[in-house]
Length: 203
Image (cartoon, rainbow, N blue to C red; front, side, top):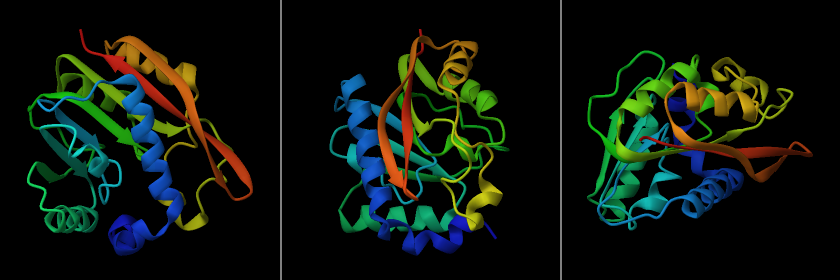
């Protein structure tokens, strides 16, 4: 069973996860001028901790995730908040193809280190954007493997990423004006783990 299905109901109980999503959102806001006609794709949306920051800022937002239980939690939260501009799609970035819809902005928080081939998936992200569209990806910088506990190890495919390497991946996927920079740190396990925001534009 997908580990995230098992822990979906408890996911939002960890304060560091809420703080992390808030900080990624703030970092995105510094780079992107959000408008009411924007359509947004949230990759690895989970229970919507990042997505829900956008709901009053943009026209429509689609959350994709490989855990149905996580998506059900997001749908429940959206319903309680009387939100009608959110779509949820069950999607496995390692095996599935995006449906051809195009977005103004693609965002992600702490998902890419769970992907088998993040470099390859960036090509899909590029193709999912409208001309002039932007990608913003928040994730861990290279770490020693101590960020995740043992029970999470099975679905962690990368112990963070080297910023230069990730920037090269963006450029290889044809993104322009790319940057990958540290935006904050997570305090966990008596250590500090830097988090970057990767940015790119579709010409």
